[in-house]
Image 1: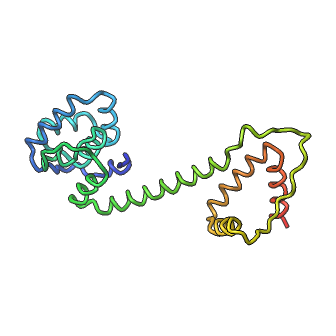
Image 2: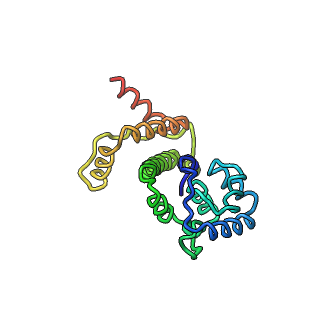
Image 3: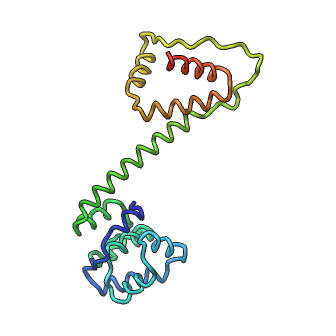
Length: 205
């Protein structure tokens, strides 16, 4: 769904196809909307209550108000503009169709780019959190024997080849995240601390 940053860039130009239908529908929906959701709608649009009141008094409604109303109240945006009599549910495709219809192609490209960046960022953060998880059942003891030094060389079996392919495909951002995760795990001591020590020596060599 669209963020406040995108919605606030929409114009306050009337896009209602049927003012009487828009007036009645917005008035009915707003009257039955809880205060918390009303506040959310106003915040997403970056408009005052007077803007909504004007919409349900005149039937004139802009994309800046249609989008947050449709999203928060989960109704078809074309129901609000009077272009359909079916309330349905709100979804990304309907919102895109509405904005394309009103020449917001450039803004939609910006939205798509922002969404792709958000998804990539969330995937990286999830991967980093999973890497940082330490098994709480693993025993910690200063008397425990030192684990054998991990070998850098990879064998010819399928698992090693898969690991090598994955290592070769890591981006610079992924490597930085993995390094940070390794440093965090090293604070627990044991084999992780030894690996980080050897990694530091390798970087300095």
